[in-house]
Length: 474
Image (tube, rainbow, N blue to C red; front, side, top):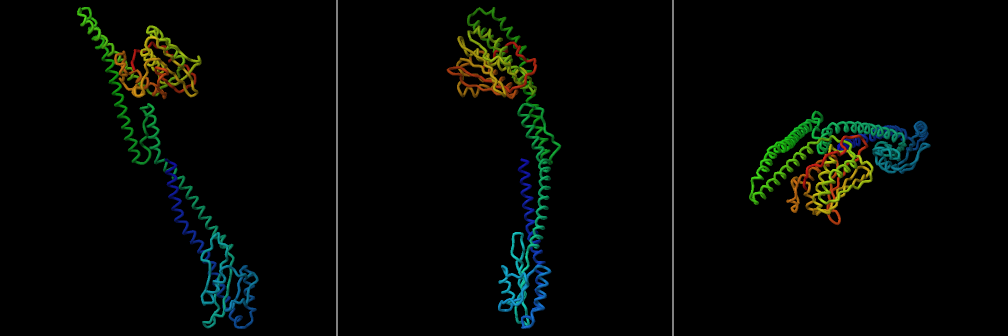
């Protein structure tokens, strides 16, 4: 934008300079030409007064002597012609030039003639001046002077170069001023753009300096900061409410479950015992929902603090942690890696929590006899972790909805889970500047891929030594 503003200022300045300097350049050329023409007309008039005797049959010696002296002194050729256009007297350097015939026609008609009106740097013809020789109103002949324009052209060119230099200096000053002015005007806009990207990347503490730039942009920056503060406050209140509500509901929910459990022995009716079992299952499911909400609130509160983590080591630890559950459910869980460290930079616990959620879903939905493979591969600028399963998979429409909170596939409504697992994974991956993608696994199943940006090897406390997270559904 700064470049476009500077170009617009520069274009306006160039147009102003052209509008001002073009008439001035033409005036300078015309003035210099007019000065030379006036001098030549005065000389020609003087010669005309001396040539009267030569045209009346007298001796041409006096006028010849004057013309030769004039030619020798100034290098300007002159001639005296009669009314029949015959040359009576001419200096040594006299040569008819372009425009001489027209000037003679005018002079022999009784008027003075001179041309051209202006000598320009690219004009090569001489200045031609013709003055009639009169005797009592009768035109006897004319005096013609042809002046080379080299000196006039050099003078005009010098003036034009000075004008061009002045214009160039003005343009340079305009460019310098335009850059400074554009920087002053656009600095708040640039800061606003940068802060907007920082906030979009998760740094909600970023704010715009609202004491620079024009008053209108300062007001805009102040309004933006006010809006950012309000949005950040609302988000903090919302997440704090979810976290507090989830935490506070656990105690009464635990007490409720204990009371429901105590009712079991007193129920002798088979139908009552079945209802009792369903009530316990619902309390367990509600506990899972509360755990998921609390985890999601904590994940969304994670700021831009990022750690260097060995994704390969974390994947190995999570596969080892989930292997007993997979074996109990008759699911084959294995790790596919080249054994080399894969250092990535993520927010704390992002890799292990994301793998916990994905492995939990894969094991849960693969069913007995299914296979789950956790694959770790580096790709230069990052590391990809893929969790492949042989479960029922998802349709294209379901894949688009999978990361929505509390969303569950229609055929998975009766399977344990809260519908927050993939939502938590998406939040953690996004906070780590990574990517989450899901696609069908051939011939059946689902492939969930995590990509995290690479990092230089560094020691870290986050080595994946966590116990399996609570079971969360898709």
